[in-house]
Amino acid sequence: MTSGTTGPGTAPRPFRQVDVFSDEALGGNPVAVVHDAAGLGDDQMQAFARWTNLSETTFLLPPTTPGADYRLRIFTPGNELPFAGHPTLGSAHAWLEAGGRPAGDHVVQECGAGLVRLRRRHGRLAFAAPPLVRSGPLEPDLLDGILSALGIARADVVDAAWVDNGPGWTGIRLASADAVLALRPDFAALPADVGVVGPYPPGAECAVEVRAFCQPSMGLAEDPVTGSLNASLAQWLAGSVLPSSYVAAQGTAVGRSGRVHVETAEDGTIWVGGATRTTIRGHLDLGGGRAD
Image (cartoon, rainbow, N blue to C red; front, side, top):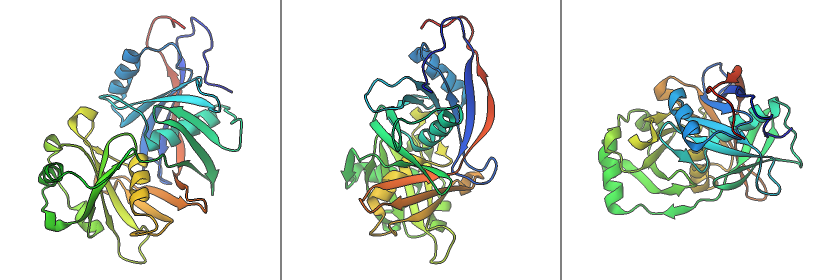
């Protein structure tokens, strides 16, 4: 199956809402997935994403790059993203559930960040972490702005770095998961999208707690469970500060039970995965006919 059009005049498009990164019902991060999205304009996609008011809404389209199984466009309520993790997993789940069959050993998604491979292991979908487009220390003024918005001092920070794999993430490492959960950011003051990570004690269910704070232009404040951020944090910390394979908790502060599984393969590829479950099936009708 491809995500191509079904012909003019068929305005309603298949729609799924998929919960990602939790084994518990309604415990993860939902993504709205529109199938057969060819013919929808940019403004329509953005308007629908704004209407759903979810962290991300995605649109499945025919691929334009050799080797891709489908093309994905990803929108927050405020803007389009080149890549995001939980929409990647949720959209692949929806595509496969609707009858999609990958051409090769992996599902290959085309998106603004390029080609992203996905696989299914241990009953979970996982994506191969895309390369960082920016790494290294944060500029002092930027770090000061982030810490002011988070309400913490430099002495509270173990480390900080750019961890941008497309969405623009900066990373802040704190001494403990409790310190991460205690944060009460001033979201309006955030100068960048910020991921914060801190460890749980040895022997705990999860290695770390993660939180993702977004600038107002994104149209959301705290993202419940974030695949792209966990992928970039793993590239920063896995195999050094953290084990090469581990489970991260996210969403605790907003009443979710997100669990992100990070696995480093022998070839060095970092795979980021979690549970996926369709919670809503239906059709999207934006009115009028389709101009394909």
